[in-house]
Amino acid sequence: MSPILFVFISITALHMGFVMLLGFRLLQFNQSKKNTDHKSISVIVAARNEGSRIINLISQLAAQEYNDFEVILVNDRSTDGSGKIINEFAAYYDWLKPIHIEALPEGWTGKKYALYSGVKQAKNDVLVFTDADCLPTSENWFDEISAHFESEVDIVLGYSPYEPQSSFLNSFIQFETLLVGLQYLGFSLFGKTYMGVGRNMAIRRSSYDLDFLKAIKNLEGGDDDLMVSRLAKKGNTSIMLEKESFIVSKPKTNLKDYIKQKTRHLSAGKHYHKKDQTLLGIFTLSWLVVWGLLIYLIISGASLKIVLMVFGIRSLAVYLIINRLGRKLNTNINFWALPFLDFCYCFYYPWVAIKALATKQVEWK
Image 1: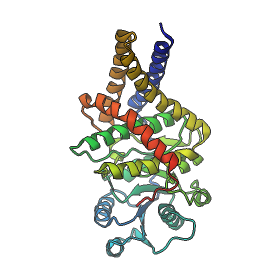
Image 2: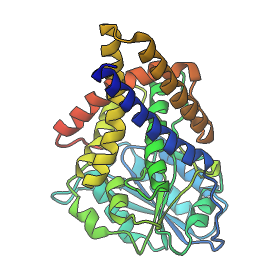
Image 3: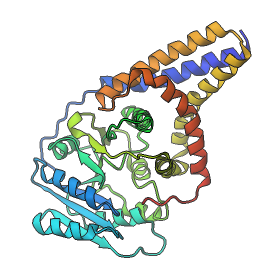
Image 4: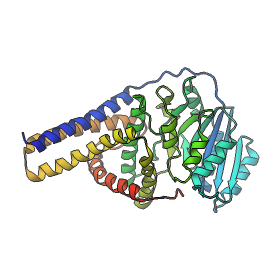
């Protein structure tokens, strides 16, 4: 056996082991929630020029079967009439607390200051975070969050699928969303919590670190993952995989906007703990190297039957797990599209990762 073939088989086994370990853990996870006390909830929403979507979000929050909550909607310098819409709803719903930001203090980025202002005004036990372009999938979202806050829990991480649409870009977004979920939810179940998704997560008010948010005020991203990474300890994080806990988000509809969004998300990775960077680096690099070596070995014609058999086993195992996980997480992808999405991912990710490393600042809106 040639050294390059041995490396290919070894890395493929490592990569497949990662996916199977995380995937099976998530597929088998069925948490028995113990907390029956309703926590008081403060929902923090930072919005900029989201007028029409704010209407939908407020309507969905008003439909929640829950009594003890407030929604702090922070309007960050909107120019589309969002302020007027928010004030009209606030006059009708006493649980809606608007904050209007006219200008940013020096050194702050828009979303960071919006969140800082919202958290400072929050009065309740649990801070729930979502975005203006997101919608709960049920009227029991608050109930699901509250039920996960047992005495030792400070952080609850949820999942947020994107709205399905009939386009290749949307299929790719669904695919990548599942891969991100596989990692941050799967690693959390193994006590390696490193991030959360700001569209659907909650943190106990007494644990939230406003001073840390202030310390990273100049970063456009990281308000969710860096905060979770700072606060997470073994045993203080719970994840929600119940379908009634999901938040659906509007996906980007063109590649330029999607790349900008992902560049902002990945830019925070530069500030992760070194151990988390190493773990995620091994996971992602193994994925990319498998494809790189496959292409090289096919071109060279070396041990083609063995190469294709090994990659075929890897692909079948990975695609079956992604397919089953997608059904569990309301992120369905055509099984037969997975090979092409997988192939595209190995070119897309290095491109976006390099952009994230090279870009100093990416504005959130």
